[in-house]
Amino acid sequence: MNRKILVSYDGSNRSKKAIKEAKNQASITEKAEVHVISVVTPGIKSNDTAIAGNISMSDAEFLLPELHQIKKEMEASGIVTITEIRTDFSQRNPGRAICEYALANEIDLIIVGNRGLSNIKSLLLGSVSNTIVQNAKCPVLIVK
Image (cartoon, rainbow, N blue to C red; front, side, top):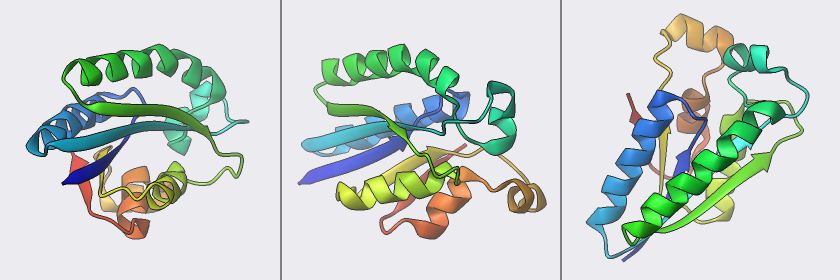
């Protein structure tokens, strides 16, 4: 069985846990392909990143070496890995771009870290994981 797993990565501890879970999920099946993507939103400042839930262009520069290391480690374990930084100019919640990527690439499972926001805060701030759960066409695994 060929299984495609998508992990949303932003460099946070929860997204690092999501990478570990993707590796576990990939090891369950003979043929797995892990897609690790970061969604960058041009025009936001780094200090707005936590509030917006988006990754700025300057944040992305720091993520690139991490994505290369993730790919290297995954492929050393025999897991086909695709890493990508996607630019979303629409200024919307990054969860939308993640869902679009999943649909276009026929992803079987999305794994994303949870920010741990309360229900009220997630309504006010717009949680990436909540957006993915609400819009994905495939199963979603939230890692805490």
